[in-house]
Image 1 (tube, one colour):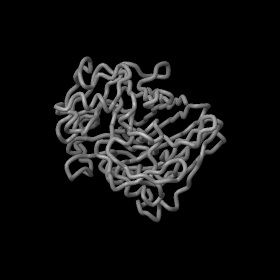
Image 2 (image 1 turned 180 degrees about the vertical axis):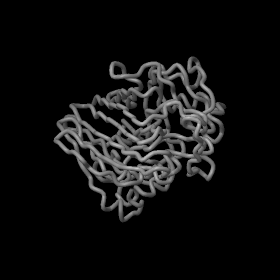
Image 3 (image 1 turned 45 degrees about the horizontal axis):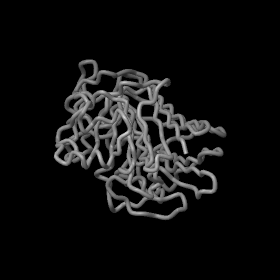
Image 4 (image 1 turned 45 degrees about the vertical axis):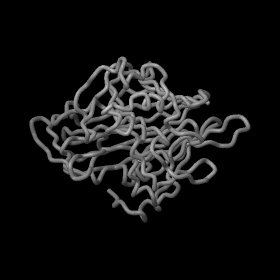
Length: 338
């Protein structure tokens, strides 16, 4: 694993997959999605993904913007993990209390090797040794990006020589308004009948029904107005909006799990995945000292809610990992309509 330094990030290679609909740029640092640009008619090129302006900023990227999350995504309370009755202490990289997004040496902040490249496909590979950040097993991780028409397909796979906890995801932030308006000025639909409530430290606690609550996004709902509608919600207050697991009632290749719609309802994203859950993060804690880059290279200051992250995932667990295995395979598809 490559040490995370600004110099290392400057050495990262950038790759582009493009067709007549989309131009998507990727970095070998974090196997991340940097830009998602589209052009419609005579319009100027528009970027709908939160993009840090310079490569050397990515090692200090508190947002995990665009990054592949590996070996795992989300929080594990107190870093305590049980697999097959064996207990493991994971690193506590969130305020010294909890384990977040795979620990201090996670692969969001490491070089990935490009192992295959075609006109429409990129494949990246990375490795983690046994007990890095406390996880058992010597592990190999692979991410394949495939661009087809207006769809980007993501295949995340891993293997280990021991049963271990693997829960890969992607942490791209979307603003279908091309950042001309807030990310909260989008419409959201999630095919979920249940949501996981968190404690005040954002640790998942219990599943509750979404129907007729602040978490009912089963039809297109304006994100910002929904948050404003429930100013007294303890869940919204603690998360400064949304930072919650939704348990999907529809997933798999035949049905989209989540959809996002621009304010003018002319640009949309449909997310399809075989993951049983997803995290919706409305960006309430985005660092205002950061800047993001538009398609023309101009820079703008970040602000809370300027873009929305959607992270397919397993459902959260407490202590014992219910999906521990030697292999992992996840499918994610982003289908755009402009």
